[in-house]
Length: 98
Image (cartoon, rainbow, N blue to C red; front, side):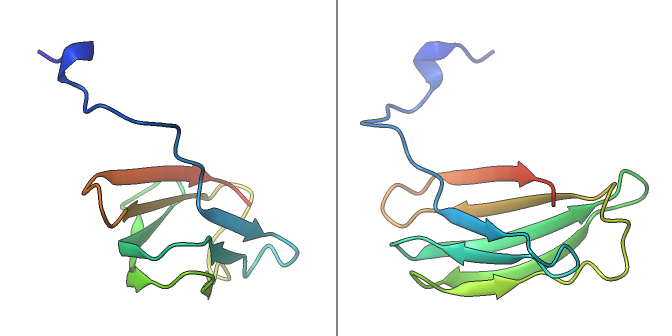
């Protein structure tokens, strides 16, 4: 059983490295922040069936990536992005909607 003592120590809050441009809801653009990220994956889920997975791998600082949502209901889709920060080896996950 996990308790608070099992959690890894954190020196300071980690600001979300992503900026999402939602001007075109069919093709939102994600921009990475100031540092590269490793093993980046995006999961697109509509609540029915398995989520679609996109493997982006290493994303450079400032890199922009587009997600095509042409074949999904944008009012029902939830996007989940997961990545590892170089240096701490921890996985981070963020969910958002367009």
